[in-house]
Amino acid sequence: MAFLRLMDYECKRRPMNIYSLTTVAQPSKYHLSPQQVEQELQQVLAAQQDVKCFSVLYERYYEPILLFVHNRTESKSSAIDITSQVFFKALDNLKKFRNEGVPFSAWLYRIALNEVNKFHRKNNTQRTVNIEADLTSGLFEEMEIKAESADRERKLAEGLQQLDEEELQYIELRFFEERAFKEIADICGLTETNAKMKVYRVIEKLRKIIKKIH
Image (cartoon, rainbow, N blue to C red):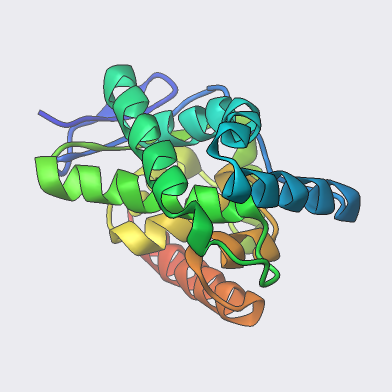
C-alpha cells in the first residue's frame, strides 16, 4: 500500500502515490550566467554538426537529470532507465533544438519531466516527491501559515495528496527545488507570467485545503 512519510510521521492515504517529506539530496539547479548559456549553445551547435560532441552535454547534465528524475520516482533503477530515455530523446531530437530564449538545459529538464509523467501513467506506479525538511518554510510563508501552527507539516503532507499531477509539479519546482519563475516557465513551456499565475493559484488552493484539515 502507498504511504506518506513526514519525518517520523506516517499516514497511509491514497493508493498509487507516495510523498516522502524528508531530508534528501536535491537536483542541481540550472542557474546559468549569460556566458554559460552562450557556452552551452556553442556546445549544442557543435553536437548538431557532429554527434560525437554530444558527449560533452551528456557528461555535464547526466547527474543533474538523474537526480531530478530520481526525486520523482521510487526506484533508482527506474530513474536510471528514464534518464537514459531522456538523453536518447534529446539526441534524437537535437537538430530540432533552436536558440529561442530557452536554455538547452531547460529543454532537457522538460523532456525529463515528460518522461517521468509518462512512466507513471504507463506503469500506474507510485509518484514520489522528496523534500528537504527545511525547504517547506517558504511555502508555509506564502500560504501565511505560522511556524507555531500545530501539525502544519502533517497537514502539508495531507494537502499535497489532494493536488493533481500538474499542480504538484509547480509546488515541487518552485519550493522544493527553489527554481526561479523563469526556469519553471522554460521547463513547463510557459511564459514567465503564466508560470507565476499557475504557481500562485496552486498555493491558494493548497492553503484552502490545509485550512480544512483538522
